[in-house]
Length: 91
Image 1 (spheres, rainbow, N blue to C red):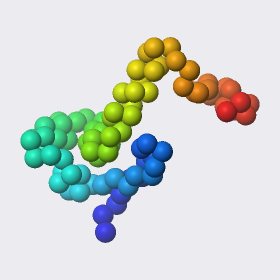
Image 2: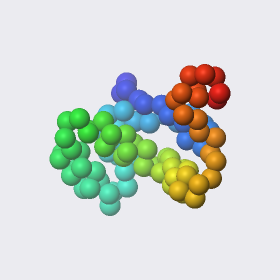
Image 3: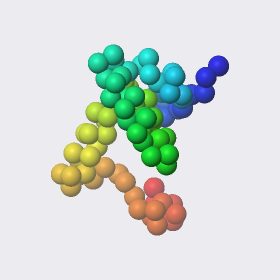
């Protein structure tokens, strides 16, 4: 059994493929060459982020992030707290 990753997308737990071999077939055929190029040229310390980006690419997480960042850019309150506030229990 291949390892997997878990994250939350749209309020639901989503299980993601956790290896290059299991991420590759989830990517649309017209994007696989780009995937291969990014994986093969990623710096060692950046490889986990590149793989996570591609594993998430079919989940809708990028759209969820785009909405969140647009809200932040518009100055909307998204309910975030600073680390100091969280440490005091303000969350």
